[in-house]
Image 1 (tube, helix red, strand yellow):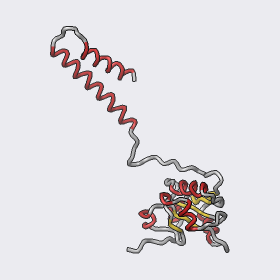
Image 2: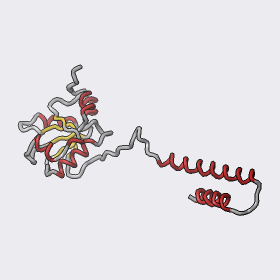
Image 3: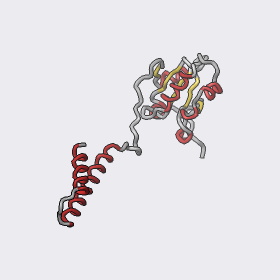
Image 4: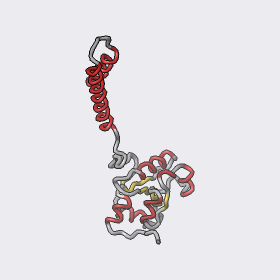
Length: 176
């Protein structure tokens, strides 16, 4: 910041001084100061820009009030006499790549109280949310929305589709 103030002062001084100097000297000084100013602002701006190609997504280890499940626990809950509902929070493009059989597609961007009520109005119904895996926060967003809608029996399959596939479990693939 001090460098910028000094450059600004120098530019102001060169542009507003009434001293007699040769035209070349004043022009050279002005161009030099403008160049330094541009270089200093472009460096600081480049440092402040977020990397939009790979934005940093912070996915928590746990969500307060929500039970985090392993693949085996998901299978257990889906095969009980009164099975939980497995909600796939991924967008259509990701789901088209493959999805866990029996999962219900409800992308986080379409999750709201009405869309959840369309799946189940029973707010005590166990709901398991999953996304692509630990690098994706879509299921986190969906769980928070479900909680705000009054659903309280919420579970999170943090490993998501990536862990399911990595463990070698079967999944449905889109037919060409």
